[in-house]
Image (spheres, rainbow, N blue to C red):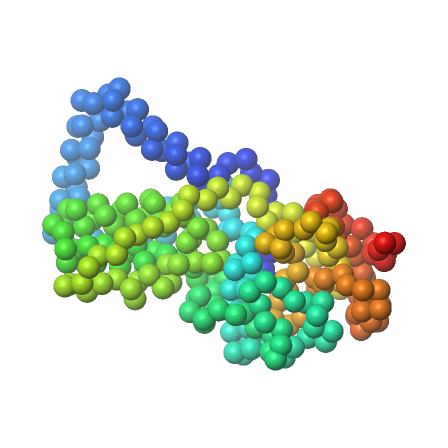
Length: 313
């Protein structure tokens, strides 16, 4: 599982998008004449582009890709934090290894997770489309998120193409750029591993079919997922292989799951495992006797890593 190095960041994509909207509204009211001239020049440039429909679609898709790449210094590739993220990443890692599913791990009850099957095979519960996109990004470009980024740019280009069948060329181009700003740059479709852009282009309705509404949520990512990523990065700097027991409190929220692993668990440098009863824990420690064993308690100190000791309770 690829874990980018965590970066503490007080900005969020939600605040950036809201800031752009407020600046545009304030400027329209405060400097209407000055801005109207600028918008007129932009409109004239777009009029030239709308006459070349194929180029318009390519421009929309390329704009989404280049703008998101330009944002990487402030908003790097996202940390996986939702159960869906980890499940899709498992699918991508499985496909990247040339397999459709993986053998169940030894002592598999320690590795059960939301949205993941461990019996009769170890695999994501989801259909393969997003996993294949992530696998392509990992194999061809070195990072699974690269596949989703390209898929999102193709989605924005496809939206522009679809709108050209229903609207005047200028409005179709505007709709394409709005999809770049609202869906391509600032939504969870691009900024998680759950995706959405990879399945949207095949769903674009041909002429004669109704236009579906495009709905997405504002998501401020901030430091979500960084605690687990920070611990993974810390362990990867320590020589040798490691196993981390995760001890949850009784009131633990099951959505905040920490136990996720790569497709090939035994060959991973860092393994995450559920802490269970003392006998099962001892069996797992013996099975992975060549690994240093650690403890994380997400509900108590979610950024603290300590040598493992059995729960006294």
